[in-house]
Length: 46
Image (cartoon, rainbow, N blue to C red; front, side, top):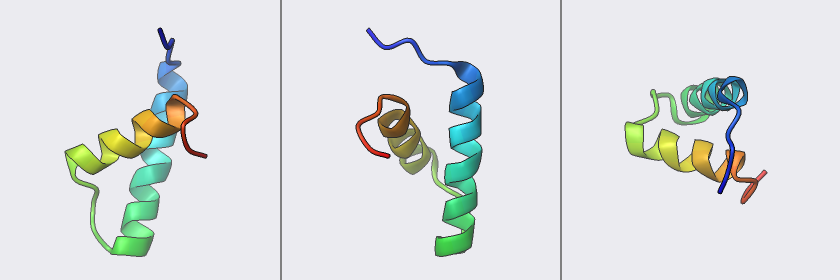
């Protein structure tokens, strides 16, 4: 069971959103944002 710190999750979501906007020039879709935030918070990717 993973315990996720909500402050960390919000920070990760903001950073992922910023990367989407900088690189892809668009806001992240819900599925893409969830995918990256969950993988990062579960430490499956860095």
